[in-house]
Image 1: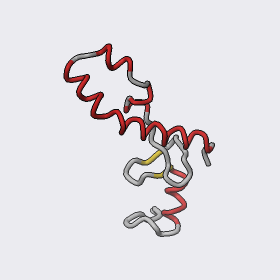
Image 2: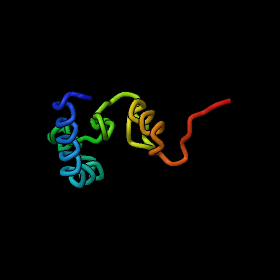
Image 3: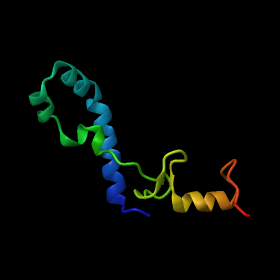
Image 4: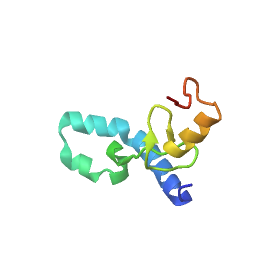
Length: 89
């Protein structure tokens, strides 16, 4: 499980990105880079990082399922992910 502070920081960034999205879009269309520089750093969407929905883990995130590889494996073995079966040959 990721530290609670990392998860909270990510949620705060998501809120700030949504809050400033329209303003950032307008400033980019105008070409006002000085105005963009005055906005908070966390208002940029590039500062967001994908995190596992269950554990908050940032590494080895599967975008299609929204979870990390560890959680994915557990859910797959329990049969909770449709279409995913243990391989054998």
